[in-house]
Image (cartoon, rainbow, N blue to C red):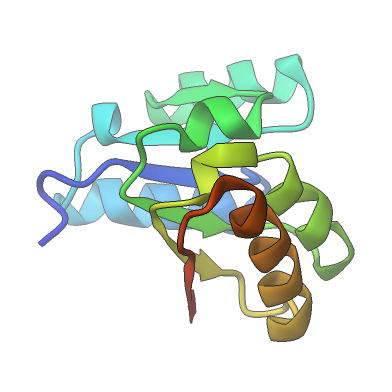
Length: 125
C-alpha cells in the first residue's frame, strides 16, 4: 500500500521522527520516499543523518509531489504549517497529529485549498 507513495512529514520533532523511523523500520517504505521538515537547518541535517531521509526547512518543498502529508506540529502551529504548504496542499491526503485541533486543521487546509482550487482530505492519525 505504501510501497510507491511519497510521504512528507511536516515537523520532525519527537513525533515526526518516531513516525518516520517506524515507517522505515517496518520496511513499508524506503528512505527515498520520505521527505521531512525541521525548523532549523541544523535540525534538518541531524534528522537527515539520523534517518537517511531528505529533510529541509521548507514545508512546501517537502510536500511538493507527496501522496501523503503528515502534520506533526503543535496545535498552535497547525495553521502556519498548512499555510506554508501553499499549492502543495491541494492534492494529497493529510493526516494530522493527534493533539492538533480538527477545526484548526480544517480551517487552515480549507483556506489553502480555496486559493489553489484543489481538494484536501484530512484524516486523524
